[in-house]
Amino acid sequence: MSRWNPWASLRTTRVELWFAPLHGERGRWTRRPEGDEILLEETLDRRSRREVLAHELVHVERGVGWPDATASTMELEEERVWRTALRRLAPPGEVERFVRSRSTVGPVTVADLAEEFDLSPRAAARVVHLYQVSGGSLLREHDA
Image (cartoon, rainbow, N blue to C red; front, side, top):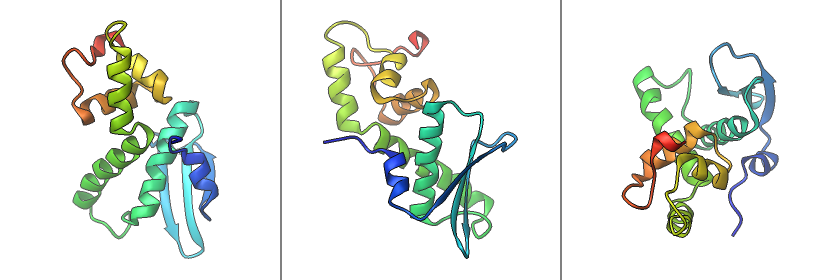
């Protein structure tokens, strides 16, 4: 089974994608009457662009966002959306198999996880926290 590819997923939608300076934001989804639009911060590196695009596509699917949602709703929504996006980019079963297999040759680091799943170190660290990977399996964050 191939891993979820947010770029391929984007191509199956009518969502417009633009790159622009966002002055502190990494991405933004807007639902407009004429169609959805995703803006990505133009200075993001390749892995971060992929992650933020995945995040924004989950927003599109869920349909919860500004200006209709409250600040408290959006705080919860952001966490839900990140969890969903990261589960697609690094599925729990695949992470578990990778860690089990890779740990036979030594400790698995956040950097190893980032490399295997094409994630930024920041996202790989979130995956570790999300899946509560620990013990002999994974991960010493200081090894990232």
